[in-house]
Every structure is written in C-alpha cells, then in structure tokens.
Length: 378
Image (cartoon, rainbow, N blue to C red):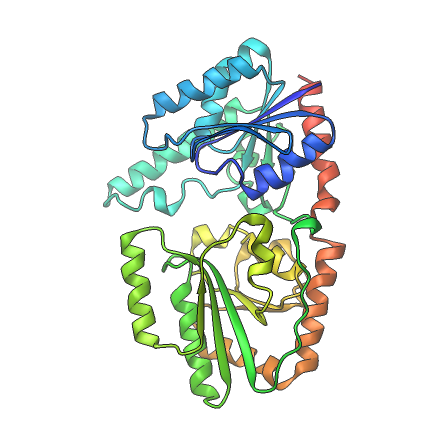
C-alpha cells in the first residue's frame, strides 16, 4: 500500500482542502494517508487517516523542520504533498534518501501581503524579495506542482516549465453541501458575509453596500448575516467601530462552524457576498467560498477579481463589482428585489454551474492520477 504524507505549517490538520478532499479521496482509493500540521495539537486517526500534529507555530524554523523530518523518517512515505516552502525544505533530505516524490501544493499568493505587513520601507521590499527567492527554492526542490488556480502559476510554472503540474481548484464535494433555494419574500432580503471580520477581507465594503441599500430603499427590510470572527485585537476594535457606525437593527452574528456544517450556516441567506479590496494579491486569489455558495444555490456578489474572471468564464449567477462602488452594488441587489424571476434564475444557474463544472467529483480523478504518476515515475 503506497503511503502519502501531507505536511503543512499554516493549515490545520482538518483543513477542508487537505483533509476533507485530498486525504479522504486518497484514503478511499486505498492509499495509506497521514497528515502533519504545526497549527494545533492532535494525535490519532480520523476516518482512517492518521494525524500527527503539534501546536508549534511559534517555534523556530529549525525546530519545525526537525519535527517534519522526524515524521518523514518514521512514516516512510512514497509521496509527500507540501503546502508551504518550509515543508518542502524539510522534506528534501528524506526525499533524497528514500527517493520520495515531493509535490508542492500552491494555494497561497507568496509572499503574501501579511508576511511583510509589519516591515517598513525599504525592509518591506527586501523581505518580499527574500520570500520570493525562498518560493523559487521550494519550487526547485519539488518534483511537481499542484496549483490552486491558474493565476498562481507564476512564478514556478514559468521558472520551471519542464516540471509536471495540474490545476486543482477548490471545488467542494457535494456530500458537504446543503442545497437551499430561497424564495424572496416581498420587500425583504437577507445578505450574508462569512470570513474574517477585517478590513483586508472587505467587511467594511459589505456594510457600505448594505447602508447604500438602506438609503436607496428605506422601506426595504434588510437583514444581515455575519459568519466568522476577529483574529486580532486590532480587528476587534475595527469591527466594533463598524457596528457602532452603522447601528444595524436586523443583524445576526454567528461564530465559525465546522467545515462539514458550513453550508448549513448560511442556508437562510438570500445573497452571499465577498467584497475584498482589489489589489495584486487578492486579484490573483480565487475565493474558496464562492464555490460553496453556488453549490447551495445562492446568487453571489463578488469583487471583480482577475482570478474569478479567468477561472469562471460564464458568470451568470450573480455580479462581479467594484467593491468601492457601494451604491452601484446596492442597485444590483435591488434588481433581485424588484425581479424575483431574475433572482430565481441566478439561483438555478448557480447550482447548475456547480453540478456541471465546479464540483470535486469532476477533478478528483485527475488528482489521483497525478499523485500516482508522481511517485510511480520517480
């Protein structure tokens, strides 16, 4: 039985992409699968998948590498799927001895803005260059690549074009989806935002749109559903000020739920949003929850990002907007309020798009073949 080991620093062991899709698919196909994360503590088995994880994100890179190398030696994998440059670097020594294949799964824009956020100029540029070179080094060490989206092929696919790769988007498995078509009530609408309550993720843009909607149509009952939370004291203060500023009456705030129950958490929503700012990083990142919303039959209103335009050619289940143009976005919402047939059509189109193009079953076979060929040809 072939052994597949997942290594990650920044993702939890039960990450939706790693655990619920990739690892479970491999386990179903007869592979021996193990996940090691440095995000939280857990040792044991879940659904037949071995977990050995430790909460040591605050430790030095040397200590993290030591832990990963120890696990590689004890588990003796045939293939190692790495989620970050550090995991690739940690796996290289074992790979040389055992000839195990290293696959680099690139799902983050690297270096991300948050990685250089606390540096001042010109240190910000220097560290960005350093992280960029580390990314190239990880690409050099890896045998092949999995790209989360086409827009993340740069720079590795361009610097190492001879290395094999596939694009494996964040399409959900239908078993984790609760399909829920809504019928709009007269003169009412419920808008949903999920994720981090931070400026970087666009929650203020969401409030601006809701406020513009309230001004354009004062008699309309607008309910807000917020699912998520803050990650820092800075975000907590920021979010508190937003709540005070907008003083919204009909608002529900829910804590994050487990992955398997995520689609249930927004079941009552009429329209789902993601209005993150358009910058070079966001422009190249495909928002994951988009596919869950459309799988549930929810029309969506999203920032007009390059990654979405390139990946979803026929966007006929909502609107791509300028997140800074709150009044224009509010008018799109009113088009649903005033034309329930249009709303129903977009909801139907969303679910149909998921079933035909954007579900895990469609891409899972390519994933398994790619993994199998990676270590079979070593």
